Length: 331
Image (cartoon, rainbow, N blue to C red; front, side):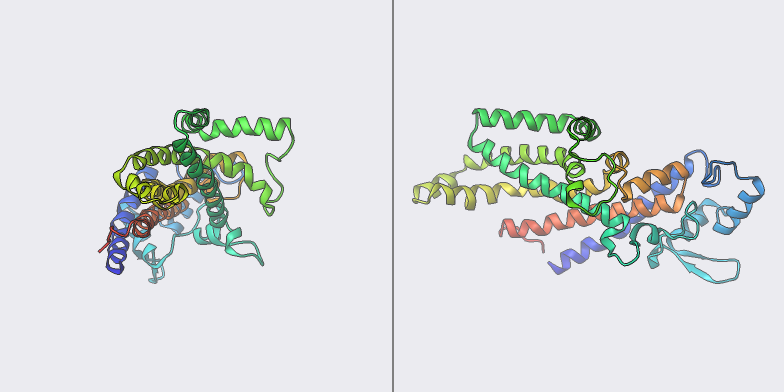
């Protein structure tokens, strides 16, 4: 397994190169720049723009800007400033005086990293994934065991809604019910310290993943139930509970795990709209703001973090396969 993990980690290098190249080309192809408008929505004069471009190296050719971001470059004083290979995601062009690491990973004073923007987004993604697993897998199992009954039909109806309805539409619908009508939750909480304020955003964000998990679990369970080894287990006198838990569910989870690993990364990276609607202090909201402000370093840094999360999620799926099915070997 060690060699496998090493190979997969080395594959991160070309992945980062490809993602960074595409992101760099697209963001520079978009019209406008980071100095078109300042934070007070006033036009920055040409002299100031020229000075800022020189200070941040934006007056250099694009190829040199790209290599400077990845590898590093020599500044005006002859000092070499290392780039991404040293873990430096660069300075923010709009939140001046702050680096991308400080914006995304630095928590408030006397608090841990889970209170940073990255920590908030990861917690929201984990809560959403837990909701999808706790509800989706049992719903799929029960639906398969109760095939063609009212329980199965109700489950399929809810799953179809979860797959068909976008999460921002679901968010508006649930906000109207629980916030505007029932006044059970606040649309924009004053503080995110209480676990209760996380319930609605986590449910909305994870509802689609829950629906896909339930549908895939049901389909996998129905296929497993018809296998010969299930009939053999029953003929050996094993109780139905043992057959379901030890043989059916365990073997049915392999295709489900395939989507759950990338699903966590997808929930973290796909929370832009939900974070904006709830005023959530996470990475997604900062990412959307950076795109509108053409904060190049913020766009590059956040995109690369998302790419690494997706790659690590795929590796984790392969590792979990070994525990679910001993016949699978990674080496």
